[in-house]
Image 1 (tube, rainbow, N blue to C red):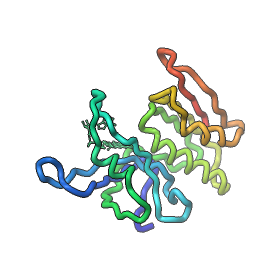
Image 2: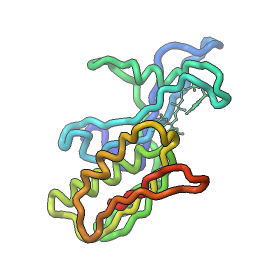
Image 3: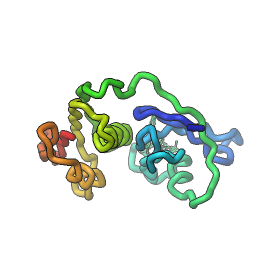
Image 4: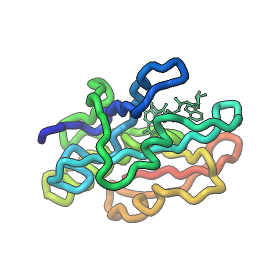
Length: 178
Ligand SMILES: Cc1cc2nc3c(=O)[nH]c(=O)nc-3n(C[C@H](O)[C@H](O)[C@H](O)COP(=O)(O)OP(=O)(O)OC[C@H]3O[C@@H](n4cnc5c(N)ncnc54)[C@H](O)[C@@H]3O)c2cc1C
């Protein structure tokens, strides 16, 4: 592949233009959300999940440079990318390894890449018996969960189950064993 990536890595995006001091924008990092063989298997593409930043951490209105640039891209736009980065948060190669993934509302992109890669291995017959366990808490329980459809789509086997659970302070969450 011209741009090889692994689940658990991130890439840097350099937004065009300059900041208030006239310097080129620094790169923003985004976790890769697709498996190593592409969002569409066999194609040299990858996916990101980007939260559009319209409020800062204090709740004040702000327009995040990188996230809004990415969310407003049109099909065919060219993007300056650096990386990939990350050598420590990768999947074990052994097909029988068990993996426990714990993520809160944001930060689920690498987990999507890992669960999807395992799902593809299973479909290709190369999967052995390794289990994945995903603890996933939604940051905004009132909003619909974009991941639950995928969890429900997982095949029900002796090593697969999806069950809702409750986190501390009665915040609704989902515990997904795929
Ligand atoms: C390893 C790594 C992986 C990452 N993966 C992802 C990913 O998969 N998806 C993703 O959406 N982001 C991810 N991020 C965060 C991303 O790099 C940017 O920081 C984020 O998109 C905001 O950048 P921006 O240019 O839009 O905001 P900026 O223009 O840099 O910041 C504008 C203002 O918003 C505040 N701000 C920054 N981020 C947030 C936030 N999340 N919520 C509220 N206020 C904020 C800043 O403090 C600042 O005041 C990752 C970061 C790292 C380090």
